[in-house]
Length: 377
Image 1 (tube, rainbow, N blue to C red):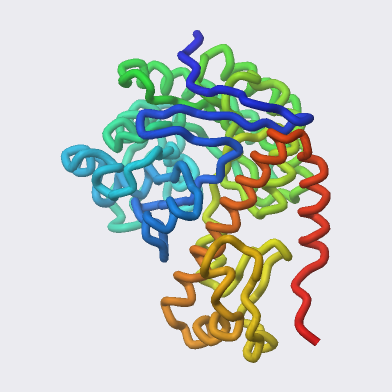
Image 2 (tube, rainbow, N blue to C red):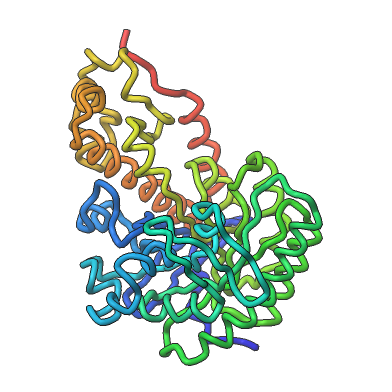
């Protein structure tokens, strides 16, 4: 069953694509990286900085928000955009991954997942219908179907069981979403682990159900990058060319570059802010560990040619001092620097695809990363 298409493909260069996704709260330029505001907040950053860095859309987490402060409470306060002050497009995940990763006591049945809250130990049931209900209460522009994610490596039987269950849950999620207002979207999630034929079967099954967009889930969960990229190569060609493709939970700048080269349009990951809180900076010349003593007397900024003020104007010596001193400002600055770098990477990829120079951009970007951080003599 087809659904209205809110995605416009603007240009392609090889498998790489750039487009525009129209949501009730604004337009998302693709390829897009969604910073993760798990509990309705970006760790270490103000929403203003997120917007100024170039982000069109952010991600909120169904599992965390349904437990605290509660979906019904957020709905009564006007939905996520008004509650948080972000105001722009938001995507919410289904909560399935967090159930897998955070809850030691959980039970998966055909009907639902039951688990103990990591906050207070309360017993919670999350079904496909409840997941969609929560996401509708939150008011997210893009909701995700309920799925079961299996950590890799795993036995083929376990992968196939979870994939088939996710397909049945996809149908239930789709039915539960039918009353959503016009313009709001639901994405299906391809599962299948590291088994190519299961990935293809999952993608085809989801297309038969019909979604506004399609995500590739169950990757970046322990497998090598080469396996992740191989699964993208298997899956992306199976998905409709006129719908957005979202690679969930990924990843490093290299992951993003290589996934865009294989036809992916959307990404999310906690890495820019999480690594920033641990003293790591992402730059044009690779990742820099500001904890290292060699930065203590280095007056250079991270990148003198960056268009982000903190990257261009603040010395490595000062960032090193903040990180080693445990100052909150260090985590804040590095988080914004990293989010800004990710957004610059996406912006530059969009431009290169539009100009038909993506392969040149890809080669130059990889060469810059390989050059590394060269200390002054």
